[in-house]
Image (cartoon, rainbow, N blue to C red):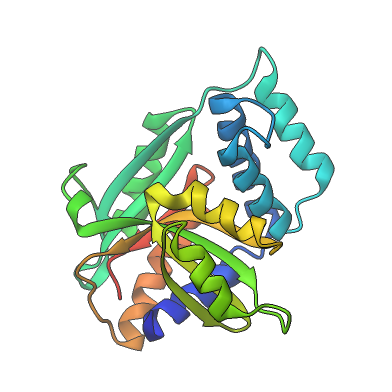
Amino acid sequence: MGRAFEYRRKSKEKRWDTMSKVFPKLAKAITLATKEAGPDPETNSKLRTAIINAKAENMPKDNIESAIKRASGKDAQDFTEITYEGKGPHGVLILVECATDNTNRTISNLKTIFNKNGGQIMTGGSMDFLFARQAVIEFEKTDEIDLDMVELELIDAGLEELEVSDNTVYAYGDFTSFRSLSDAVENLGIEIKKASLQRTPTSPIELTDEQMEDLDILIDKIEDDDDVQAVYTNVG
């Protein structure tokens, strides 16, 4: 995935290290998944994934159960999942996935963040063809795991690429293979660290380290917003 991928991944992990920001976002993802398909993770794959990701960030079990319970209650908040598009410094294209109970507040906040940090919000729908949706399953590389065998087993489940970085294995597939790929990893007895649907640029661009630092300032501000769930760029 290249130097820029490593830079973004490590920067994001550092940014998300603040529990006061991470836990509310994770709880919102659990709430959305529960309201969409029920409170049972065995039959609700989206909820199962949200719980896996919450545990990966050391979110306490009580917090997870509380989020599920709140979503099942009569007074549960109604969240809308919406994606906004923008342009950042050096012509970088940015997709911002949000979960919000007030779209007016969310777009107002994002416009302010973009405008103050060298960017602007753009008309929605103009970037769809510039990004491909991918399923990404992450698990730890151990001595017991035969990656060649794992790769062969996962191909039938939709695996397109297997990558190893810093003792973490990344299994990539088309977004339609998310369920089959995650199930196949679990069926091999491998514990999933994280699982997500990500967007990757179809025509990635390259930035210098200095330009990446400019972009990082904007992304930091965007990810600090409580309504923001994920941010993607067309940097390769």
